Amino acid sequence: MARSQEKFFTTEDIYALPEGIRAELIDGQIYYMAPPSRRHQTLVGRLYQLIANYIDRKGGPCEVYPAPFAVFLNEDDLTYVEPDISVICDPGKLNDKGCSGAPDWIIEIVSPASRRMDYSTKLFKYRSAGVRLYWIVDPDKDRITVWYFATDNTDEFSFKDDVPVNLYEDFTIDFSALDI
Image 1: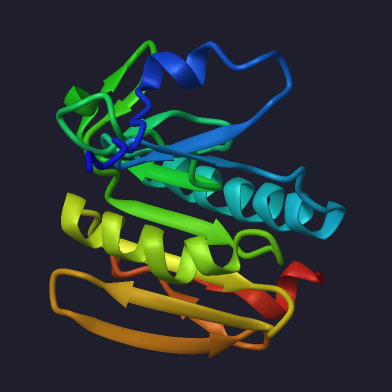
Image 2 (image 1 turned 180 degrees about the horizontal axis):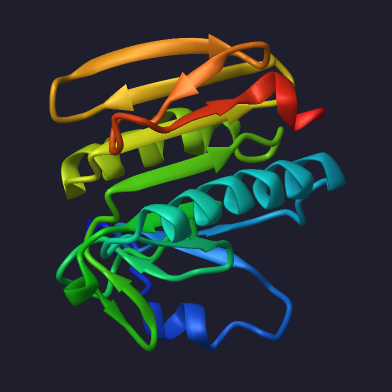
């Protein structure tokens, strides 16, 4: 008996979704995204502002983008993600569609609908794609988990901590000051 073939989707399918439908594509599978909560969006906005202000003061090639911002992790059209925040330090990866390749730093804000994706599927994809620094900010647990993929280390912080940004030796984010 012949096995049924699994359907694989491409970025073309993502771009063909109806207006207002957000989804990501990982290894040819579509994952629909629920609308974010107000707290989620407040966190994204405040973190983006802090990072953008730091980068503006520091200068250099890095750029920061909040979602929705297209990241094409692989050299194929089977993976398309929209991290909550992406920091890209190689201008050669940026084009009119988004980022082609791994950002240097990705931040995902966990929501009930994204928990498994952020802690498992995306963790694996980001590590294997070459992301240097991955933060999972979990508002329900008041926890920030930081993966340093280059050294294979992990740290955990609370929303009361000052979290070091290892891309820059003089940059930390004081989560207690975010007032979330």
